[in-house]
Amino acid sequence: MKLCMIGTGYVGLVSGVCFADLGNEVICVDKDKLKINKLKKSIIPIYEPGLDELVKKNFKAGRLKFSTDLAESVQKSNIIFICVGTPTKKNRYEADLSQVYSAAKEISKNIKSFKIIINKSTVPVTTGDNVEKIISKKVKHNLFSVVSNPEFLREGEAIRDFIYPDRVVIGTKNKKSNKILKNLYLPLISKGAKYINTSRRAAELIKYASNAFLATKITYINELANLCEKLKINVEDVSIGIGTDKRIGGRFLRAGPAYGGSCFPKDTRALIDTANKSKTSLSLIKTVVDSNDKRSNLLLKRITTILKNKIKNKKITFLGVTFKANTDDMRESSSLKMIPFLNKKGAKIRYYDPTGKKSEFDKFKNVEFKNNIKDACELSDLIILHTEWNEFKLIDLKKIVKKKNFIIYDLRNIYSSEKMKKNNIKYFGIGK
Image (cartoon, rainbow, N blue to C red; front, side, top):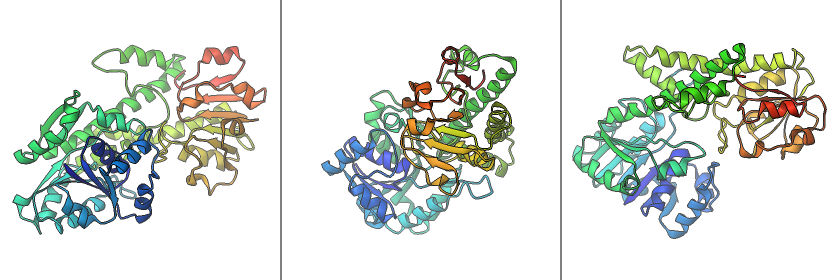
């Protein structure tokens, strides 16, 4: 099939490359000329394991193309995916849909034969209705169909999630579109993915409801971790104890920093905004958002206690600053709150992240990126393990810190408190 992906961000690029790998002809379109030129040279704008190899392979095979010409790309394709950003509006919970509607207007100018237009961007309920209205101003209804097809890709696991999805959700009551899209996804359905055909609005809500539920599980275990610290209980025992219940499940029950990234923060807010507009209470999700917003401040209070209120001139190291491992995504990462706070209190901060230096910290004095773990940790007073990268799991900290009295604050509970105690290292975890 001939596909057009509008937007070469996380969703558009990963989905486009994977569709090409399944044998489709794919054009990835973006108005950013520099990004497109880099992609043509197989220079990938995001960090995602395995993505660069798939781009090179399918670009070389001619199944994958990159373009800045949206009009030509739409005309050459049968199925058009809208994969643009839907960030939260400034100082509001509402999703900014300007890029979605702009794409819809451009698409409407270039429809001369039947096209399936798919919202793959995460959008509030009724967005598909609005996209349909925009396109119908210029195009007859029998020449297009607007469908919701939400993505469920985890950053760091996106290629595997695309190839082996739990489900494929197609929101349309148009029989022709449903048949075509079921055929498009047949290679994944044959591997065990459940194909779910719903109304367009239901598909839009499924995405938000899924992310809000997972965000709730994270917040729930984080709040239990707070209680465990007071009662001197290991939250990991509690997580295993409740997670082995098949009705609950163990995934997303690991205590740590606040949830972050490109999805959970904006999607929980947008769901609340949708509920408010519908005059419906989502008090549980409101509480989740509020609790998560306070999470970094709570962790900073504990750091202050660990350092006995003496932060000034302390050498503090952050191992990892992205919101999770296997991604370079800094959006809504806890480090964006924690590092500036500690810097303002007079700490001298060094950080190391496998995905490199972060421009977000360039404006701060005494915040320095180090190219390796050894240089980041040497002579540190406090090491904060912020992101669970594999290379942090087997570090001989005593050897590289070269200091007797240093402290570890493990925000991911990847180290054994018993082993740390045996090695005479002062260690703090989450929910312990």
